[in-house]
Image 1 (cartoon, protein in one colour):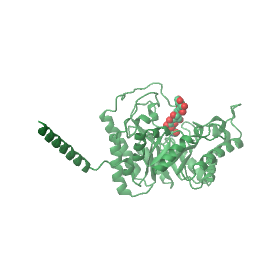
Image 2 (cartoon, rainbow, N blue to C red):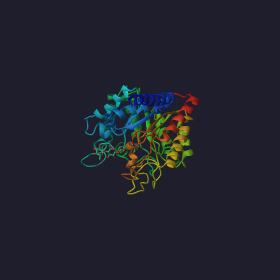
Image 3 (cartoon, helix red, strand yellow):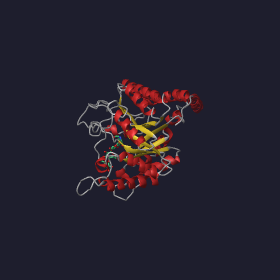
Image 4 (cartoon, helix red, strand yellow):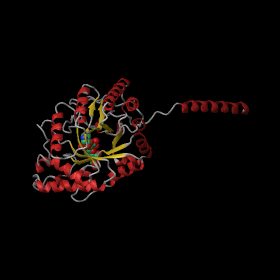
Length: 381
Ligand code: G3I
């Protein structure tokens, strides 16, 4: 009996070995980071507490070569109280990136959201501060943050979402009220002063769209006419699964590329869930309720549709050497703001990895496109 038993275990062992041998011959699928190579930065937005989980930290360092703080570099996180900077959480992300040879993008120095009231508004009277007082606060914040990260952050979203959707031009914000129409110009001037080596970007959503693009082009022209050097434009890329705006996206990319600027897709996600409104990140466009059809996972036909959308978008990006970075707005479906927007508490699937960090068909589509695209264009990031 014993002899047959030993024979059996030998046979089984050799069988599993040969399977392993066979499996190991099949080259492991390249990671997103490997597929992007040095053609472009491929990044993700995250919160520093995501790095506490070793498995997740390993996944992030393997798949991405660039990181953006989803919230922890915003004004209300770095200087909630005037003159008191709190860099701890953001430093964790930058230290991790340094350790794993990843590039950090700073998001964001001037924004109407997630900014402490004292920066542009008199907290007693609730009236806008004087131009001088508001400029001093803006300059103090920009210098305080950029000095702290000098040489460790490749580029900054200096101003985020200053252009209005319904307004004829600039969005009505506390900074606009206190400083005036040139607040964007002043912000870029302060940023250039603070760190002449850092790249400086204007970042916004839907600026590829026909209704908003002319306003963004006007702003970029005004910055240029004011002698302000802008290094790049960030198209956030909060898009929907239907590809009705594919042509508009390409025309938008081309319009900014033709200005000789770097063009970056800075907050990419593709929403497969139904919405009443279009894409973008107009936070006032919340919806009280909405269908939540994929609580138990994305059906295969929708997975394939999502993969096709990501494939087409990346194929477009690779046609433009000016596109130097694509950042996904989240590391995986479980860490996406779209689980809470525009309807709270839905189960969304807008990214390349599922909640178990498993690759989705969309990831394969992006990797294949990157592999073919990078061999053709040969452009550098
Ligand atoms: O930190 C507080 C926590 O203390 C509190 O317990 C919790 C409960 O409400 O809220 C936490 O703050 C949340 C913060 O994210 C950090 O998680 C805010 O409520 C929540 O509104 C905030 O959402 C962020 C949103 O910007 C705010 O505007 C999203 O995570 C972030 O993905 C999103 O990112 C923006 C980009 O910066 C700019 N473009 C659009 C994009 C999507 O809105």
